[in-house]
Every structure is written in structure tokens, then in C-alpha cells.
Image (cartoon, rainbow, N blue to C red; front, side, top):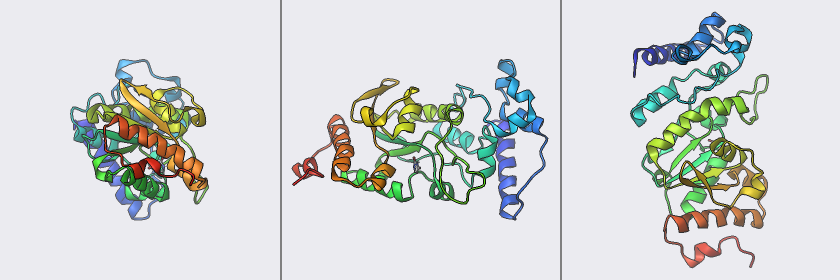
Length: 275
Ligand code: URA
């Protein structure tokens, strides 16, 4: 970690301590906050006009440096940089934890979801809430354990919901563009053989194109040379428990298992078929 990131990590730690003591606000010069979000990029390219407008800079993510993370020369260094990230001031002030990712960092199979929810923000781990429990069940039904695969999200921070006491919101396209370079770098380190993109946001974030998930799911795509299977988000199955919908996700997982040359029993092939 370089001196900048050490300072940043110390500042984030200090702010977490103040938050734990009940402090809810800190007074920061908006221009300094904006400068902090762009420590090195600003040296390389002209300042974005939004950075000269303090009110905008404080509420919007900094423009995405597409090479963010390129400086991380190990997975651990990347994790430290991500945990200290302050690119989206609104998410920095609302988050409890940065949710980096979990699992086997040399996994053949990687799952990518949308963004942490409240449970994940509390735990600092992706997919631990109800949708996460269902994802774990899907992984286990494939004959794998959760710690054999890698699980991450397009966004590393929970999207804030100002003024609301519960509920989630999808990430904005600016947040996705700002945060996804971390994920790209993470995938470069993991080098999975297959990526499963869970839901529309994950597919759009990885492929950088708009998709209709109902039409797209089940058809192999390619992400930077890696086969990518788009499928429904497990939260969709929580809302729609029809056997036909369960079977669709399961067929996508059977295709993944076949491509990874994992053993598939007759029983597994027949799951969720009408009797
Ligand atoms: N939904 C997601 O997309 N990711 C999580 O980590 C949890 C719920």
C-alpha cells in the first residue's frame, strides 16, 4: 500500500470510530473531499467540470478512472485499496462495510451479483441475506461448497437510500461505471473459467451493454475471453417460486456444470421438471 492509501485507510478507520461513538456528521471542505476522490488521475487528465462544483462533487461519484486497481499488484493489495475506496462520497457516508467478495480466489467458477443489501453491508460479505441463502443452496445443489467458488458484486458498497429506513435501490449507471473497474481487476486475479452473472445489473455491468434478462438468460456470452452465463438473480426466485422459473435457473446451472465438466447425476438433471 502506498502512502496515499495508508493515509486514506487511517482516515476511514478514524471516521468509523467516530461513527461508532455516535457522531453522525463531520465537517469537510467539499473541494478537499473532491480532491481526495481523485488523487492521481487528476494529474493525468484535465479536471472534470463537476469537480469544480463542490455541491455536485460531494453528491456524485467521481468520474470512473478505468484503470483504478491497475496499481494493485496482488489480490490482497487490491482488497486493501477497495476497502479504502472513497470514490462515491454518498456511499462512503452511508456504508457500514465495503463488501469486497468472498470465496476461493483461484476458483474456476465465479458468481457476480448486483450490490450488497443491508445484511451484506452489516456482515461485509456478499450474498448472506435471504437471496444469498438461496444462492448458497443453488451452489450446493450443483455439488459444490460456497467456499469453492468466488462471489462478488458489481458494486462494493450498498446503494444508499436517503430518508428510507429499509429497502434497496439498484445502482446508478454512474456508480456502476465508477465501481466496476475494481471488479474487472478482481476477475483478472481470479481468472475463473466461468462467470455466472446474476440478474440484469450484473450482466449489464460486466458486458457494458443493456440487456433484457428474460431474453438473455441461458445463452452463453463472453466477458474478456471468459464464458459468461447470464441467469436470473436469486431474489427473483424468492418473488416467483414457480417450478418453471426454478427450472430455468437450474438449466443455466446444468449448462455451467457441463462446461466445467462437473459430474451431473440423473437426479440432478431432473430437478424442477414437471412430474
Ligand atoms: N443481492 C446482490 O446482488 N448481492 C448481494 O450481495 C446480496 C443481494
